Length: 355
Image: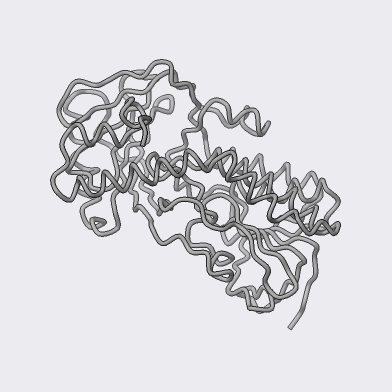
C-alpha cells in the first residue's frame, strides 16, 4: 500500500474545494485536491444562479456567465406573480465556472486529480482511496457535498436534505427574471424557471418523503409553461441531487493528529429556504484554505477562527432560513395557505419579520 503525504488534502473540487485548494497553495502549503468526477462541474447538479456580488470573491465568474438576471417573479399558487425588482444575479455555465476555478487552483500550485474517489477517512485521519492508495495530510478540507465523507469522519452529517429534479428546456421568449413557484403541492420546497439565453433550467425540490412525486411535479410545471408558450416541449437534459437544509454544522474537528475543516454544502452552508449554495461555497472554501495554511504554519486557533468567521457572516441568514423552513414544513403538513407560503419565501417582508 503506497502512502502519499501532503500538508493539505482537499476532498472535492467543486467551487468550495477549488477555492480552498487555491487559497491553501497560495499560503505556501503542499496541496493535493481530489474529486471522484472525471471532469470539473460535470454532471451539472445545480440551477446555476448566483447573486451578482459573487464576483467580489472570484474572477472565474467572467467567462462562465451566460445571462444576467434583473429581477425575480414569485408565483403563489395560481395568483398573478409578485415582482421583486431589482434582484440582480447571473446565470452560469457551472461546468465552465468549475473548470475555471480548478485552473486557478492548479495555477496556484495545487495538485488537482480527477477520477479519484475517497473510500474512507479513518479515525487516524488516513485517507483511503478506492484504488488502494493512502494519503496523509496535516489538514483535510472536506468540500465533497451534502453527503460528505469528511463530514462523516468527524460525525458532522447533514441530516436534513431536500431532493431536487431539474430539466433543461428551450426558452421561447427572452426573459431576465428568475421565476419561483410556491405551492402546497410542492411540499418542503418550490419550483423554478431560471433562464439561460436560449434555454432554461426548470425544476423543483421537495422533502425526501415526497421524492416519488418529483417527476410528476416537474412534468406538470413543464406542461403548464408549454401551454402558456413560454418554453418548448423538448427535454434537453435531466439532472438532480440533494441540498442540505438543516443549517450550518460544526465545520472543524481534530481527527487523530490532523485537522478536518468542512466547507460549502459539506458544512451545511446552502440556504435552507432557497437552496442557494454557490456563493457560500466560494466564500467558505477560500476561508477554509486560508485556515488550512495557517494551521500548517502552526496557528492553533485558525480552525476555531474559521468557524467564528462563518457564523459571523452567514449565521444570521442561515438561522432565519432554518426557522422559516420549519414553520413552512409544519404549515404544509396542515395544508399550507398562501400567507404561510409567503412567510416562507425571501421575496416577502413576512419572511424578514422577527421573530
